[in-house]
Amino acid sequence: MKKNENILSSKPVIDYDEKAPKINAQEFQKVIDSRRAVRIYDSTPIPEEVVMTCLHNALLAPNSSNLQPWELYWVKSPEKKKALVYACLNQIAAKTAAELFVVVARTDTWKLHAREMLRIFSKAKNVPEMAKKYYSQIVPFVYTQGPFSILGFLKRILFFLKGLKSPIVREPVQKSHLRLWAVKSTALAAENLMLSLRAYGFDSCPMEGYDSRRIKKLLNLGRNASVVMVISAGKRAPGGIYGERIRFDASRFIKKV
Ligand SMILES: Cc1cc2nc3c(=O)[nH]c(=O)nc-3n(C[C@H](O)[C@H](O)[C@H](O)COP(=O)(O)O)c2cc1C
Image (cartoon, rainbow, N blue to C red; front, side):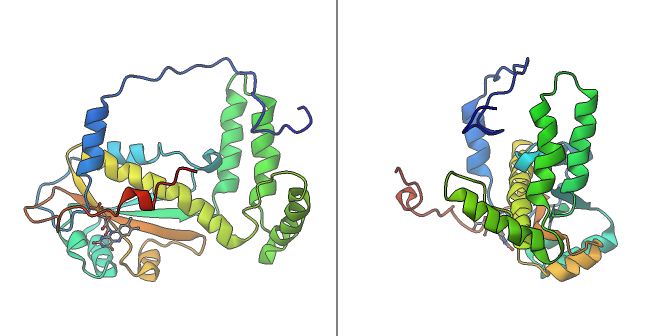
């Protein structure tokens, strides 16, 4: 690697190409426009294969370093479903839903998943050395925080000093950064799930009005798991959307700089 180059700035030698298929942009726009937070569902069930397709689509979301820090719980057991609705404060969006999903971010699976990447690489042809080095050396260095985040603290100092000279990735250097790291990617999976449900003719509601402690207990989740969202799904009932979509003027948010 030349001076001033890094693993992200230099092009690896790869013999691979993937053509972009033609997309019907109008149909995609329809999915985006018609995905609404649906609070009341009718009794239409969602076919199992549709649910599975949508869950698989969730897993196709882009994610940091492809370390896939998510878990998707499809809560099917009637007892667990009842407890989940209760933990969701008995929201109508949960009570009337055909299906309920708990979208979870994990900060403790990156090591295992880095090893999994290396295992897959070991069976693949022509994997650049750089990619192997990324998962065997850089990932452990970046994500390990150590007990009481001691390593994170030392890295913070190192990054500060190195950052005086040139741009450097400064996070994660504490457990809360790692949580944010996992939640970012997991939220994208949640969006994939909701857009897929819409594309297959169903509706959803993302929820964070819930008791996370009760949900974690219900799903046996430890302290390295964060409940990012509960997503209810089904077919919208008449009156199931509470009003026209409101968004503030785009100029408030879209900044051309
Ligand atoms: C992280 C998150 C949490 C939300 N929590 C709830 C909730 O607990 N209950 C609810 O009815 N809607 C919830 N919503 C839905 C929002 O209220 C809704 O997306 C927003 O009003 C915009 O409406 P739209 O999705 O129809 O465009 C949540 C949405 C997000 C993204």
